Length: 80
Image 1 (tube, rainbow, N blue to C red):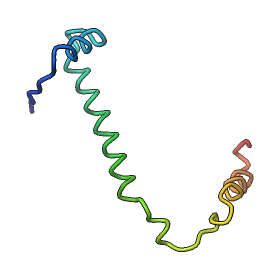
Image 2: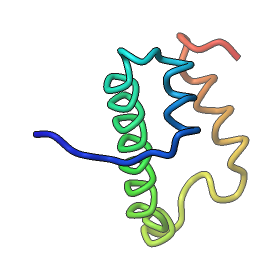
Image 3: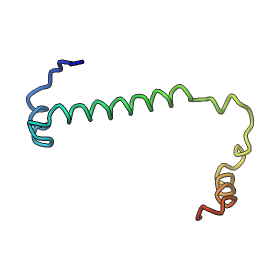
């Protein structure tokens, strides 16, 4: 499938400078893939916001730093 997009001259010049005129499509493809990954990640974060709050008291509520330290020390494979 093909898509037509319009970019201003300054943007095209910058793409050409960084990627080379023969690599425009690959450069734009990588940029779109990266933007989609970021958008999906943001969507996942938004959809999971508040989930832990709803599940009741947690063992880390009183002192989150102590809970993290205890977890680290419980695993002999971890340093620190």
